[in-house]
Image (cartoon, rainbow, N blue to C red; front, side):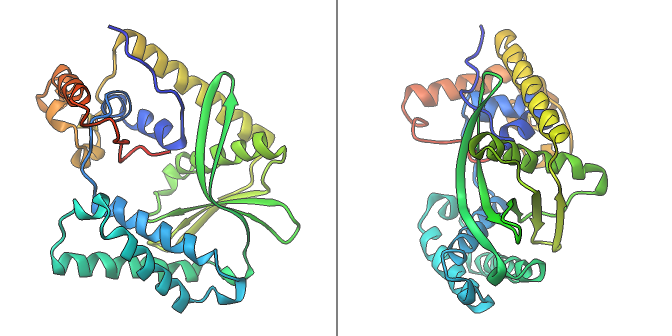
Length: 283
Ligand code: SF4
């Protein structure tokens, strides 16, 4: 039976479908819940701390202020199911917070926030790209010294091997295209700030890169529609399987796709999942 395609695409959905079509199906189409992971939740915390930092006046954006922002963000997060469901004991919680602090401190090794001119933080943009509704949340949109737009994306995981850099830049190129469609201006630069290493990877968007991203989004959308139409989402085993919440339903691990779909249908009909958004594939 044909499946209902998602209503929108985002950089994370594009990456998820490319990584493994079957995991994408379970997360985005069946909307099976995934348990939170310490890595993703730490990312949420660090992003929230940096969001708070940029609400401050430029001269106030010091390391001490950033650590205060981290404390405030953690106070808010610690009662959220995304954190509570991790069920960290005191030692693991201390390690979690130490690591979040290390990432925030590393941010200051990449740039001086007192010189940044933000014009949007956690900015949600959407656009129609060739009939596909695409949306994304830009961590930070700023103006450079020439008044040109710069898109900034924070990454709390490890920087990719050079061979995979282009793939990771696709996400920010996607944001660049959203800016172009919404503001009529192509950003002068897009940059990824890898806080773990710390390392900056940046590139200059061009007419060519915009067209390439648009073509890629169109091709992925066609592939998703085709997979939905034929109910044909295949597993793509890789090192990501180690962290996959759907292994029990995956044929590559002896599971059955139909069982995952049945579980999702049961949870949806009981109303259990109605308010749940997929954890791993947010916009
Ligand atoms: S276990 Fe691996 S192959 Fe199977 S759905 Fe998850 S990521 Fe895909």
